[in-house]
Length: 338
Ligand code: SAH
Image (tube, rainbow, N blue to C red):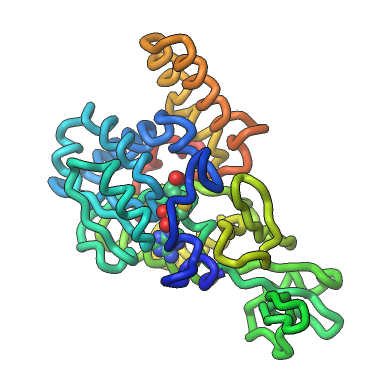
């Protein structure tokens, strides 16, 4: 997964811009400007809750085309003290998408990073929409002889990659004890890289203050089952076909992220369904207000875009929002009951 997505020459994210109707997949900020606007206002409130520090790093992980951040910054203009406090940082490895972000975010001053580790210290607000799902995951398969890591080999005869099973037993504690009796061929997914990133965000927020908002598709409790998928041109593709040509993701295990954050001395809120989160923060009212000033076709698009983000049969339930704050901090907006 790491090679397929990140190989310097052939990796999926190192090539052209994959996002949008003409690309391979579409994301919430590309569906409605309201998504980024709500997150901009969320950030302003969180900044105030953190004591309104004169400088705050606003850090987006995997900003795609820069659309979410452009919408967030526009909304932040309504809170001028917050707007001037913002020091903008983007964590992005794709040269193609960095170029795109530069265009979208001009004339804002932006600093780019390959990882969160180089973002300067101090209070920070981290935003990650559909970022964790793209970080590599391990898979384990239950065999007659117990759990084994699932690997990828090259099938010389077929001339293409094929799944295989590691002969070695996984290290102790890799597989949760409650999965000891899993049926044969059951699949367990676990991403140490995601957990490490969540722990790093937790450590930093516990020490320097601020918050994080993670929005992604995933499950609130860990479980069995394969969620690895490849998507190209808005359609599923076999994950081993034409490696590097499709987006690869797995569902995010929010329980695993929360455990990592708590272990690092910070706390989490949620996950709460994306629909409930956006509705609590007034997404529908914002769409109505924009529609009132828009031409009829635009107004219809604004309403249907927000509906898709909120509806249970759209992105409202599968996608979830989770926040990270310091241990004693107040509930961030949208998480008061979470
Ligand atoms: N947040 C955007 C894009 C989501 S796609 C949106 O909602 O539209 C995933 C993004 O993460 C892309 O910008 C991709 O280039 C970036 N990315 C993927 N793996 C990464 C990694 N390991 N480090 C930094 N950025 C990464």
